[in-house]
Length: 467
Image 1 (cartoon, one colour):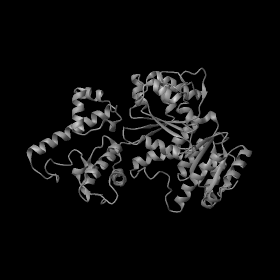
Image 2: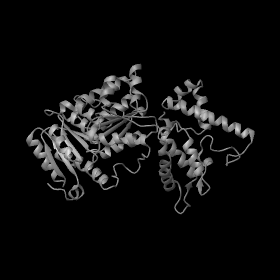
Image 3: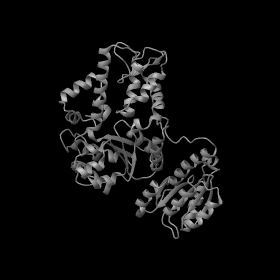
Image 4: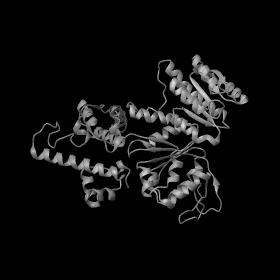
């Protein structure tokens, strides 16, 4: 089998296959050679280092368990001496935990034996194209255009996304509401070996246990009132694709136990059914709360946490990635113009003063809040460029004086009060995960009073993942 397009793109790639079983070593070398890459082989890590030291190796595909030097030991040496070399780990099922540790140690990917030839080609081709692009002085288009990562903090998170994407292990994405957890989950799926299959997102906080179980596990006809026909359930419907479970901290203890069994056995029992059914899916979960703290409080199962968090990807809040604020604003401005303005309408830019206001804001609602602010600004803007008072952020305007330079005492006092109220309520809602009752209790307010303040300040509970 040959791959003409890959051959032309990867003829500058040098791959080293390290495997102690000769037949597997030879087979992998021949397989990777169909991509047009130069391929060398080594029987163990010690021999591999000799080849690497001779120079020119770009990518190492290594077995985990080998005599003299294991794959994990080889990885450590390579990352110490030749950090630019990409490493792919090949492992048996019994050493998956070690392989995950290798991902955290800098491996680009791992695959389990017995491996699928197409998966090997897909992984080597993807990494190879990135390597060749770097060699040519260009930049590989690894991530979707809608993902902005100019800030080093976000770049670190996306590096882990790229490393884990093609691996079958469960992933836990952690971050505040509005940081883009579902966007990252979709990117992991897009970069995975099952990208041609379904991706289904489920907000577990939006459904009570019975409906959540029916949604995920399926049900038989007549299993409950209103079940007029049978349904397979999402775990079966994705058929090898990806299931994204958002806000998993909201799941009840009872449902946590049922989900744990599904992950352990890879079977589900639909509501009303008499037997289990096999399922095949890749799971990505997300939480805007500290699950380890919940475990300590007895609110989340420790065994489920470890099942879900084989690889953890923490997403930074927007306030910790300031270099991304302007490019994100530019991206959302373009979207807002296309969505909100009628054809033929004058385009809208964004002023330096407005950008300064965006840079100074604390962004308790994170990227989602920034998107909403830009869309609002485009809708209300009556000038060539968005100004601070179009953004609707606390401190960006003065009542009766859009320039913000007015000295009216009453107006300045009202602005200061609203600024305090907005920041106070937004912090409370963030800490409460969007739960209005909890936020109100923490503030010493009634739920109704907090809702009145939120309506007055046009604060949307949806920005905090709330119900």
